[in-house]
Length: 300
Image 1: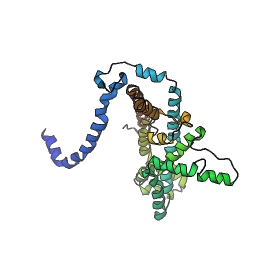
Image 2: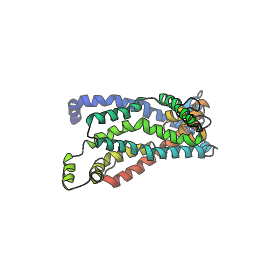
Image 3: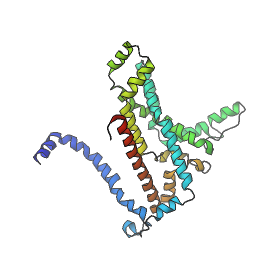
Image 4: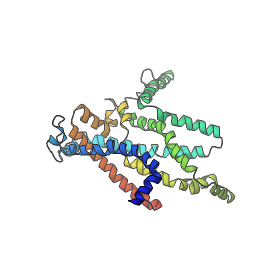
């Protein structure tokens, strides 16, 4: 007790800084977990959580046996996989390219231009897509018409929507994500590059044997965090781009839960699907931690 009081007196200000973050997680993360019980009930808003009748695994069974189960799960996994394969390495590649730039002014300009889209909402980004890709008035289709080519319905064509989702995700997040890797690159000892240069190592060998191992822990950490949210494909982005013509290829768990839970009022079913998604994410985090331990001997 005496030791605890000494620590509080010594680091009181630092502990006080933790309070807002702890309150946020307590109020918005832990307290709502009580309503997980709705996943096992036929939830009625008038009866409340505790008075609503228990239905056991019925909500989960309704989802698994539903006509849209394969389509929704398939879309979610595919879009998540595409984002993992293409969006995750993009900030790393950009950071490595910027790290090789010697001109400070040019480097700062590129950094600014690439992370500015992070501050744009998906509503604004979709407005830009309409301006460029709309079938009738979009700039790209006007250029196609000029060259006597057929117009392409980018925003309503189901075969193109996944490509559009992944591409815009990269454009919106690549610059912001690169900041983390650029910070990690500054922690690499410059003497390692000097010694490698004296030994005749080429730029590619320095990249492979010094730069990438130097930021390996950060890459693994970001991968673990990404895997934990592998089924969170981005509700805002998908919702704003979704329409009846591309829904077959773009409808995911989050948009389905929104329609079922809020529009149809089937809170129990929506909660069950959300819980199912959270469990999958939790299992993936444990698996990613195991893999991370094999790489660097530690686990987060």
